[in-house]
Image (cartoon, rainbow, N blue to C red; front, top):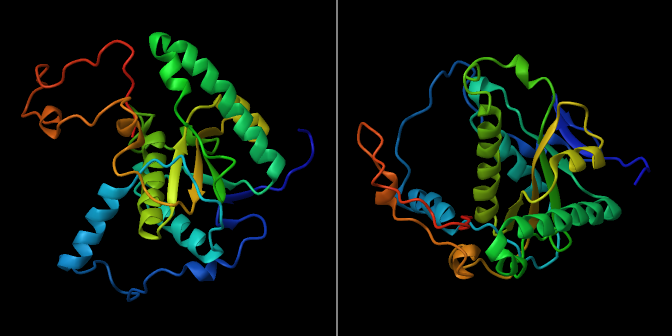
Length: 264
């Protein structure tokens, strides 16, 4: 696909493209002299809502078409943009896929990698091919999350752990995920693609790196438990197996069976 495609990309202060005014995304007002905000706990209802969003968040693959209101989408992206980041580097960029042919091309990249992943799974190849791994053609919105070039300039918090740009971007994605649940929308994070091929398709500059294809939109319902658990692909490990005191305890976590893959 060589045609010039207009992409909407968050970068350096605003949206490029035909997005609604950012005034629709206003933040809570604070006094100009305020350096702190009260540490008052949430009310019981507010606290319950936060935990409900966490526990009911699902990596969705089944969508019901429809649309996402522009104001809602901007609210979600503001939530993502308020994620924590190492050194306050804010490495996330969001490309909104509006072109139908481009969406079809992304779907094709995912399908190509799905076949390669299945082959790499060996004995689980057939089981994997039965899973629905994307909703690129079904979701109301598709957003590609990518990190910009020049990230090596951010040394604060990354000198020994350069991968913290990825961790920071993951926080933004999780914020968006939880906010989507609060808005009654589903979201799926697709990572089954060749990042170089996706970067070329979206005309990303050298050094930029895509992390995920986010499928977002109305759903008929949320999975009662993670889809991969429903499909008997994997199950959530007990929390106790993840907790240790002072030193690493190898007895806490048994290695997964050969070929076992874990998902959310």
